[in-house]
Length: 329
Image (cartoon, rainbow, N blue to C red; front, top):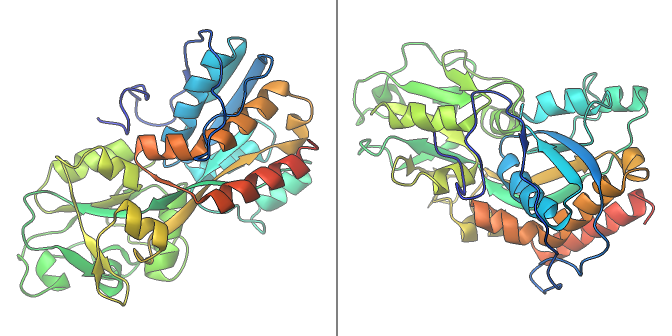
């Protein structure tokens, strides 16, 4: 299995895998216009626990690795169990920060209501932009672009188990469609089902599901007739193993690229990526405050490094202002 930016990201086992990067001495760099690190301060110590989105995981892991180099006494534990799976832990106070590839569901018993009931205060901070990528096997020579209606035929709740490619387009092979998609706890699953199928969680049951995007990548790579979807970074790191489809969102076929994701023309699958820190804990934890400060100062650098699209400076500035207000800085 190949993860985005392999120089920074450790190999994972299936499911949520904990990583505590090796600590070594170092310091942050001087600030830059592109969102590079702010001036170094006194190193902080303490632990920070993070869970949530497998899509956001590569960015957070990269940030954690470098933050620990500048802060040898800090231990940042990063895991992924999907956006929804992570919120279930975050909203009972089990973790300090949740990675999310969709906004929190404020009216959900396991998310917003649970946070309120347990006194977990948080702030939503956008850190990057993703283009949810639909990919097929490189040997698939027939499909190059799909409409939302065609994707719904494949992944919609009424899609039959015996669906063939020729059912989607009569000119395509009369061969079974081998479907892969994220698990139900994934924010990517939530976003896709709402954008394509018209309702969150409404999806076919005739697909292989996993919270580990690398399982999906391997599944698509292994079958000429397979199709799957996941975060853009997982495609970027596996361009030799996958072929990305262009998406026709109503204005013609558009491929996922940094430019089309950033300007919104890759629709409807361009989306923001977030982190949600526990602001109550942040007021008591120098390690959590320092980590989020460092994250926002370097989000653009690490988002680009692992294969996502850096958010515009105006978005990061808004996130920084919201964070400072919420954390009482």
